[in-house]
Length: 374
Image 1 (cartoon, rainbow, N blue to C red):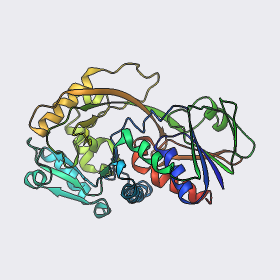
Image 2 (tube, rainbow, N blue to C red):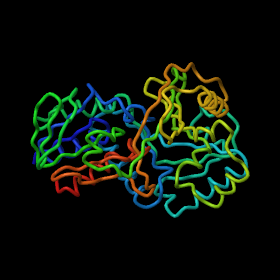
Image 3 (cartoon, rainbow, N blue to C red):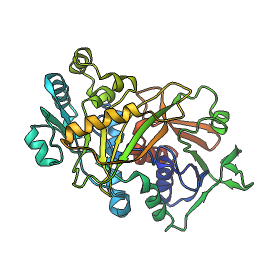
Image 4 (cartoon, rainbow, N blue to C red):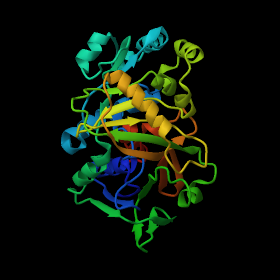
């Protein structure tokens, strides 16, 4: 079978990976020299802990298994099963963590409620004051800025894989026929459009104006090396307000009696933090849903995140060396992991994983391959 994949972000690259693994001939087309969107501008987290129970959690757990297997073959991915800690303060936040540990699927996630001493034994960098910490053993991480390069290098070892960067797809006609802006035509048995947050132009023409996907903008930052290991990923209790796994009466009580600080509420914030291979910390994030998006980054969210991180680390944050904004595509139906739609004979659009993209991409692509009979 011949497969054309349009888009070289993590979702597109995982579709190419599964197709090559199954013995198919793959052409992957990317409009940039390399992907520059959400696949690089994220935490690199394989984030199981907060996923909604059911289909979303199943996809995340399957993806976690696939990431570990691929990471064993491609060490440059930087896969590490580091788990995560969410320190909590006070009885209201503690009650939400206790409700999470009481979930029927808590064992599948690797949830455990730790004392401050147990949490610091696991991650000695957490020297700040907190009441307890929710541990999720199944969380993991990869290096987002280099993961696609590492996967591509491995794919290029196969004679069945061709990468065509710097080409924008202009038209999709017939059964799996793609024309790019170099005037070349690519014929395949299946075309998969993994265009990320690019939802206009050709995507709108093919999928129609009522695509059930929205764009979300975020702000993040990265520091100089911390100077010591941050042995787990770290979240704060505001992540309870954001991720569906933490929905409970205890969360309702937290929201009612202990609302977010003004800046965090205004920018729909949570803290997530991961240490990079060079020792720096990737820290975020904000969420902006209303168009038109701002064209600039604003400082107040960074100041808020700095304060939260320093209170958990019990030390000043290293110098911030990168700040950036990113945009990802998210299904408007919160119960859907991804939007998968046949938009033409032999052509499928796969988009909208939202903040689940890096986590779930291997499982999303595997499901596509299975459904299309690759």
